[in-house]
Amino acid sequence: MSLRPLRSHQQRLAGVVEAIATGQTEACDILAAVTPGGGKSLLPVIAAARLIAAGTVDRVCWVVPRDSLRLQAEEAFADPVWRQVLGHQLSVRAADNAPDPSRGLAGYVTTYQGIAAAPDLHLAEFRRHRTLLVVDEVHHLPALAETDPAAAAQATEEDQASAWSRAILPLLECARVRLLLSGTLERADGRGILWLPYRSGPKARTREVELDAPGWAVVGYSRAQALAEKSVLPVLFGALDGEASWRDETGTALGPHRLSGLHPDETTRPALFTALRTGFAEALLREAFLAIRNLRARRRRERGLAPGEAAQGLGKLLVVAPDQTTARHYLTVVRQWIPAAQAEQAVQLATSDTPRAHELLAAFRLRPEPSVLVTVAMAYEGLDAPEVAVVAALTHIRSRPWLEQMVARATRVDPHAGPYEGQQALVFHPDDPLFGLFRRRMETEQGTMARRIKPPRGKGGLPAWLLDQLPEPPPGITPLSSNALAMRYDHLAPGPELAMRRPEQEAAQGELVQVPSVVERRLRARLGEMVAAQAVEDEAGAIGHHKGVMGPGLYHRYNAVLKRVVGDKSRAAMTLAELEAALGWLERNRLADHVHLLEGDPRYAWSVRKRGEWKPPVGRPAQPKPARGG
Image (cartoon, rainbow, N blue to C red):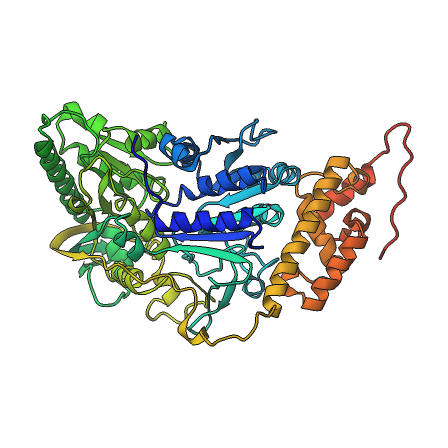
């Protein structure tokens, strides 16, 4: 068994964790900004092995965005080579929301959805055990108004992602050490990311992640570094141009219009929508299919394998479709190009409504067949399948984080495919101007920005924030036809390094000072931890039953009580003096004694009704109602 060397970012993380374990640093927040495909799945194993051995934490909780990634997290701890390299015998389990999620092991793996479904269960676990919290793909979690002043000023409607943030926030506040992982540090919607520190950005109305914030340890691994260490593969883009025609909502036939162009215009969205569902898509699919077929044939010849002989390392094709209906059409098209006896096994479909989708994903990752997988979104992020050598990017989404993750499915080095120099990632995509914008940003920008979103003005060109996402075209578009024109190939440039500090901020500082923003962040986190502690203690001791506030969401009810006490100000809006005063108040008072302040708030009407219905147990006197204003 040959031992694998740690990559530079893995070594740096090991150094940070060692400093935490030995008390050389007070940092408890680690941000690992690792280029997609750069190997971040080992980082939680490195951190947990050292921190648990040192007694700094008791357990690890690894949170992933999708259920399909839980198995990969378990595999990372079970890998025999890394067990020998790191000298650990830890195991974690993929847990549901049943009590005792670790079941005697070193920790558990759960999902954002799992925590949102039972937040109190997980919060109680964090209060019982000193926990290393690992949040995978943290860019999925938007910042909340409770903790981020900019998010408070830019209030948005509650969505699923915000609900995930709201459920995970108390765990972040209670964790002994936090390890946040991401392949990108910006969100497609321009909002900030939960828990990350921000500073003003170089452009107006923007913020950027403060990579050198006090109390944080940042481990960066850019694509340029990964290429230099041969940790990821170079990328060759095959951009296919074409023309498309469609009928608008009035029934008027439009086109043909070219896909390509220097800038997006009013035809960009409907042309791409049409192309992905008509003849152009089949032409692009054919190019990707021929590329993987030729690659597999060449590698078979080099190894002396028979045409139908199964083997790992031959290369695979990942097809990313715009929707499930179109994905099923692509499946039918590709199967027509393969002998009937092999087609059903060689080409598979994995979407959210496909039976046994997770089993198909596992087979695609670990077995020689299937060699072609058609999907929509299930496999684009976090799929660790090094055999993927070709991607057919037939998706309408144009946000940088999404496309970076999709491209990275083909940039993993395949240990079964021969020397590194003989491998590369090949990505076929429509040659539209929005994909070109993504390419330029990936090559020139760090991807750490958050920006204030303004509504578009008038009906002119698309606003900058919309260029990232390219939503569906206006209702009524009927695709008619499309055809492919010319193909061009371009190599992706390595991209910028992850700069910890902008040049204009390099002025020397004579002494270390505690700036107000840093102190405010620390006090906000401390407030959240104290609220969470009271919620868990009261739940465990049933102290709040006579108050009528027990049950799911107690942490957020107590947050609301604290907000009433301090004059209806959220933590994000409090001044430094107000934060200090709130901490002092919490040290002397119990939130359960002030729940009457929620009366009249319709969000807590259930709690008020339950309090009126409560009867004391036999043999125990009823507790007096607390005085108002105390």
